[in-house]
Length: 619
Image (spheres, helix red, strand yellow):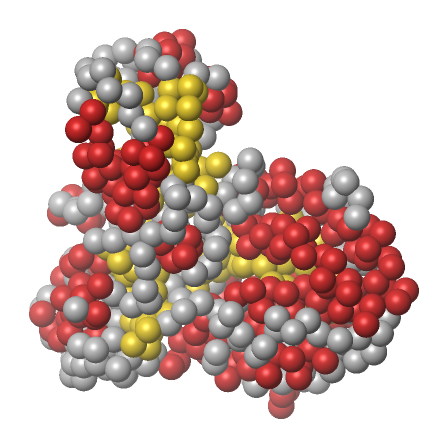
């Protein structure tokens, strides 16, 4: 029997072992082959490393592990499956300056702010310096995989719209910021050695500019100046890329003027940004300016990406989960170029890569890389209600449910699971909240379709609003109706990403009017604003700082509209005894039914309040 290959948790260092790009790619692909073939052995080794490194931290001691690091059975028997609420007190202690080994033996270097929320605030995910290496490793796998499907990508540049977001400091002095902001500000990104695969049209200074207008303007300008060199375009989320195209629609005349004159618009005031951009915009280019003007002045912008950047081979954006709503718009602007989702990651941990990147968006699956963390999977089940197909996921698990968790190599094809991770940075059997379906296997490692984020009913960009939060926000708004002797009879919601860019939340309200005084439009506007003020900090940041979400809209519908909605659900097979109004609708015929019965609509008149950081930090 041949000897199994030795398992390394990091691919061999590039610089000393191979020099050509082909060699680099080969070694990265060999690494993927190795860790997926030996997935279970790798997972045992990962868990052993995590537990031995953190053997004496408070959290493990508290649950009786007492330095036991030998086997998975003991770990699973003693350690409970956890949620953010279970560790929030520990997180707060670290945030407030606690330096003892509470969750991790290594110092927590910063907190990564999750777009999932707890009590209306971003969750704080602990991280350590070593995690930057692990995240960089996953990034290094993406282009070797891509190069198998699209040749010669090293011969041009990528035009990616990358941005940093605001950050804050905890009372104990630790930085709290989104994971991508952390990565872009790290030396791994800023001081990266030359690599043809990370050769972007945007200078680092434009990406790291905190002013979102100046950053977007200059990244677009640099992309236009180098339009013939661009072989791939993208952003992190589909919504962000579409926002860039809409920005171009609005500001192309200013951009054309800069290219024609060889000077940079005075609105760009950041000195480092100006200096870096002027190295690219170094002289007037009448021919390019005329070409861009000719394309942008046309009424129809269909295929504008392939017109302005004619050598583009694909669009690299996340279009899984809630981002799938943007696929038709992306197809329109790109002439249906391939939409590529390369990787799967979160604030808690980076997970895996797409080994078949040119597949259809509906078929995207991610292969979890077994070195990234220790993975477990909790089976989930669906409840069908005609209109809704909701996921049943208990908030806390009993002993029987805890025993249902399975390891990476033991998941079943076609089954849906909630992802549970144990990380090097101090999360233990932590429920990430993502629902995945097993789509296949790469050797012994499963490949997953991303299905949804649990409990999320509304999402436009990075925001995630669940049903309970929406209910509480609506209840706060309903108080404005009391003086008119009116109540809210029924409501539902919809994330509208087609009629406005950026997209916005729409609430359909059916009222019960018992008074005779008409309700002024300003009252419904106050209701819109009250809802926005009640939503989580991620939503409010999207409205105020990132400009990634438009004003919330309330649409008043005719009396009897929700009876019609129930009739439709029953005609589609719902049980009249079990039917309840869905708090979010996505199915086009239902949205059309609701829109056909709208009698008036109102928008939030101003942005809600938002400041960086957590509420308790500013008290």
